[in-house]
Length: 393
Ligand code: ATP
Ligand code: MG
Image 1 (cartoon, rainbow, N blue to C red):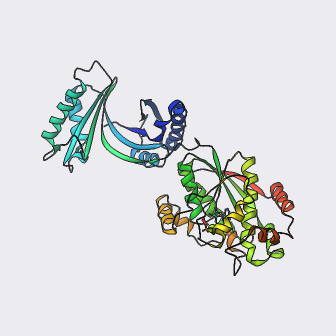
Image 2 (cartoon, helix red, strand yellow):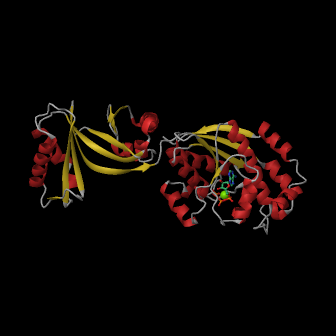
Image 3 (cartoon, rainbow, N blue to C red):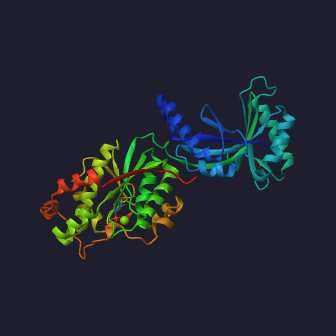
């Protein structure tokens, strides 16, 4: 039986005048994710988007991919019946719905008649189909208020659709519909989750990674690229920037008091990230920080890092426990990659006793011997590498 996929968008429906723009973005994202599986025709009608494979297509795989596309609240697979008479439609329903109705206890039928020439009206279609399915699937009962299964029959100009298998979508807003943000992506557990969370709100993701070779290895860098590819399954292609951070870290080690190493390093990361963000039209930074997780993430430490930023810093996991972050990391399949044991530049020169209640004037004084602007200019001129990371096909 020929099948198609129906898509219900969520919050887009509330967008009033801009709705068409959001829908077009969603459709572009859908096309991009399905392209490796084959050609599809896409139509929209009212609040539904219809996806019709043009040739053979693995629909299980298509659904799995679409479940990662933000802006989709719910998906349904539907059977297409080309002969538009009740006999054919009923026969197709019996076969197509066996798997769903067999184990169900209650159901109802909803009919939509777009083709006004069809001889039965919507309530008549519902009644006739309901009676037929009752006779075929026992001991099924009708429950119009809270049915386990809602069977929908849509009579369209060119045929009928039958569907009853609701599949949850990823929710959120279409990737790219809320502008761009720059994600500070380490190899850890938290930052990929932070990127996923903002991508869900429609923020296009650029990523910046600070590498400190030879203290950090090529493998550590590959791991970050792999994480970016996982985020890209949801966010769309990620523009990546890798920063040569070694010299700055060595300068900090040589010229600053040890208890401030991590904090000063983080301030450099934020300064460079703000500059890269502005050059690439990103309107915010995104980090995976969570209050109190480590010394550089106490509220006072965050004040000291924010003090050097001239863009908003979004920290979507700020109030989450590690266990909650891990749960999300497992869901988006970044966890196993994140826990691979490669070094991060943050762990290269860690102070034995970092200050947990740093004051801004102390940190500024601790930076006193560094040529902050000179070091940053140097990195901006010759320490950046840009490339694009797409989801694995
Ligand atoms: P994580 O490594 O999540 O993803 P963490 O608990 O290890 O988090 P830190 O190492 O203190 O935390 O870093 C806090 C945040 O700073 C990270 O979530 C990330 O956004 C950013 N960050 C840390 N190291 C780097 C790096 N090498 N490159 C880019 N961003 C980094
Ligand atoms: Mg980390």
